[in-house]
Length: 106
Figure 1: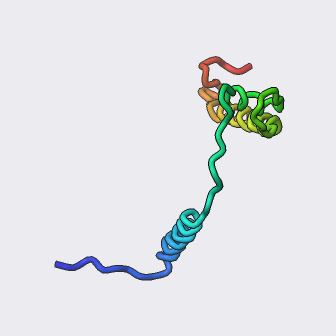
Figure 2: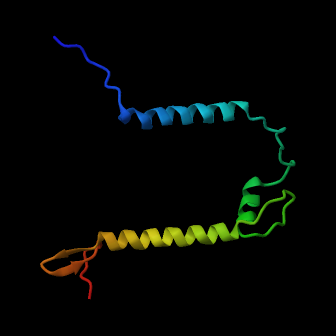
Figure 3: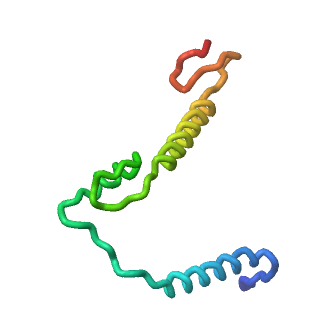
């Protein structure tokens, strides 16, 4: 009966790098200090404030940053992903292109 042996070599470097990175990140996160928590004023809608921040309008008491550019970029990326998914879903049967919906493309 043979015993399992530890195979030391260069193939262990990625694992050791991952452990070292984990240790560094744990040290940074555990040593980080955060300021006091800032609450929201009473009677202010946090959800409404997020909606106004997305369209870069700020009629509320909570100061926000405008995220209109991020919203448009996200919409473009999701549209490109949807177009790619439709393109990948097409297939050919008997020399004709058939879409994912089952209809034939003309």
